[in-house]
Image (tube, rainbow, N blue to C red; front, side, top):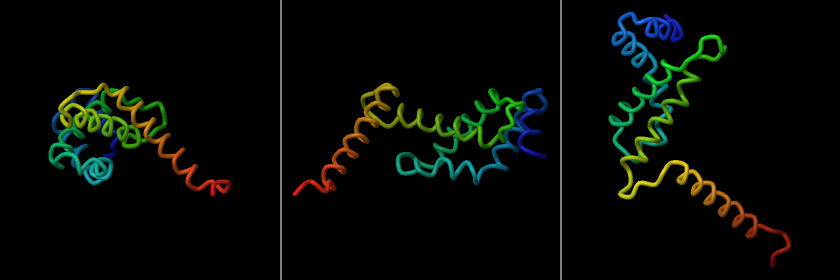
Length: 124
């Protein structure tokens, strides 16, 4: 049974918990690959649980007519769920996610500009 067929069964309401478990277990190695970059911040068991919630979100919003494989679509939802979990639990002071994204872009720009100045051929 393909992922897309399993998602269709879940959305039709047939044995939802069993099919969700099947979907999760059959894609566990891929899910672990998606969340591996976040493993340094929280225990893997917690991240896998959040990945399950992301998978559930992906099932709810997946459009079969979009000609996109389900796990390609689910990757976004899984990563988003794990990132939000880390944002909620990882810091004493909560910074909104849009502000955290601005900070990350700022740091990246500063780093790129700093690297450009150090390697400039005009500089002596």
